[in-house]
Image 1: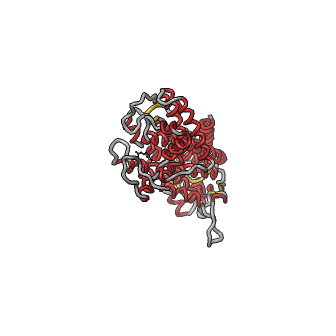
Image 2 (image 1 turned 90 degrees about the horizontal axis):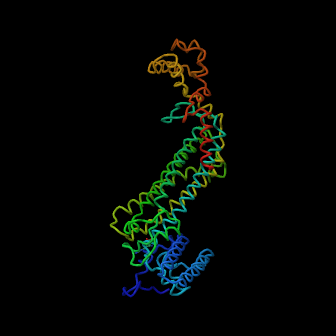
Image 3 (image 1 turned 30 degrees about the vertical axis):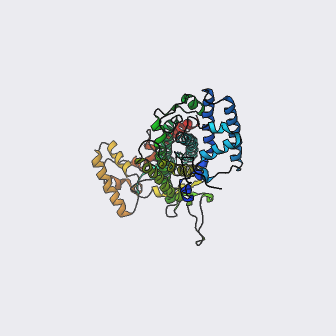
Length: 459
Ligand code: ARG
């Protein structure tokens, strides 16, 4: 196909290299459906305001219906020569319906058009991601419910700290992903405003009705400054920041899944369909999915930095730099959608080895704090109790036994306040059950939290 100059303004066509360099159609064509939706809402407003005729609007509707079906069936011919999704569709419309197609761009610019398309695309993406976060949280809730009584060691500094329930551990992630969904919901409010009507940067001389277009497209409001409407991408940056936090949480969880699946720990197994083998070591079963998710966090963080950097030096209003917003944004959406889908499914494929968890909780003096608290309740100041238990632990380390394995007489040598009721306190079950307040690890609290969150999610 012969290269054409842009218009009579140009004396020569751009070189093939420049054409390829400036074109975006091969990635922005994914916005075709929202581009058509936006154009139809614009055309509907133009005819309502008598800027174009009812016949023009009807022709545009007919042409766009044809184009939609060509795109869906894969017959639409995307041309690099036509630079982007917007010009490709507009050109085809004019081929199909003639002058009505040429009138569509009245009172509009690609600058407000593309900003509208991105927002429509993102709104759908955000809704999908919020839905997937919900599904993932429901799957984690099911696992947490099965294991609201299963005890494992809780760690600080990767050292055994205190016994906790596995359900409680999972609830920590359920909280994180809940805040992620809230952040997405909050970001959506700022995404859902209409830039169309800003035209290139200053507005238009036509008597447009921006609120009508906003209502047709389901926007909550219009953007209130035309320069801002076409030039800022803060809403996309905000989305990428929220996405980075989702991946950060996914990555932390992945790290734990990987550690837990290591034979040295052996707390869980992950269903075979989420793991892969080795081309050389026949015995291997590797947790590839969590590892890859941990790795993909890097690209999502990179996309956030790309968008921040893209924006920082741009003077008002629109600059072509902004065309570079799409690939990082799309990549972030794709990565999040795939990751959340897989994790929602994988949660159901986690089998818990409760024996191994319990055995680990019995190592490392996880109930030492319980013994100190016990002494405090008998009247000893906390610092003195802490010291007495430290002596007891030191003796246990020397004798290679657990606190609960010492006789009452031995324990009493560290404090005369210790009585026969101490053993209940030193048991794993006693320890977790005693942390019985909102946010605590007691199975009763875990069950209450699970049913509260499930109700929120299902309403
Ligand atoms: N493809 C462009 C983008 O993604 C559309 C807007 C182009 N406007 C312009 N005046 N070059 O931002």
